[in-house]
Length: 224
Image 1: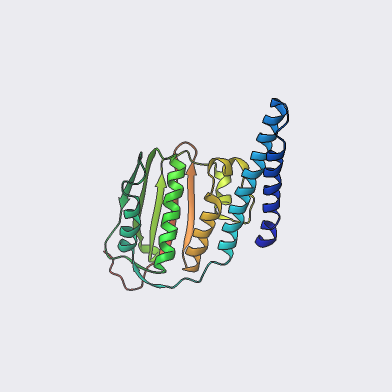
Image 2: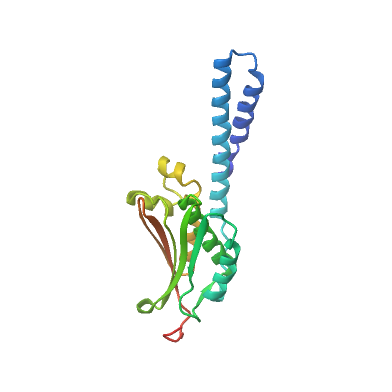
């Protein structure tokens, strides 16, 4: 399906670009209209191509290569990527109790955290606070990883669209938070393959948080 959708996109884009090149003898007002419309066509085609590529990647997501993964190691590797990289954004880190381990694919879990932190940066508009915190859930023998931000937040009724790749994303949501839909759907799929769950909470004007809950490796001490 992704292949069939993508096939006509290149001819559409090339035709718009050809029109723009050929219609050079118009009066200024019409020339401006042609340029505006063809630019819109080519821009939207590029967005569709990107979306189709993401759906194709989502559909062929590889099976996780599960191993015993210390949560602290995962954090050290991912958080190091963001130190001093994004001006104007401070990242608070609460790594939780030491010694927590989960059964997970290290590379896929890195993608999960990177995706969530990237989204948090988008929601803050690259000017604000965000953070990551870890806690143990004793009643469920699980670990909870929360990525939060103090960004613009979203309406409660829009939250389900973020986690479902096959639901039409509200246009205002897509416009303001470009790229978050399929990414969070991928996060959800990866986490559920590991027996975990993902929840999203948000309040307009106050921020959002995404919680990833994963089962702990059995037999860990209560303090760790």
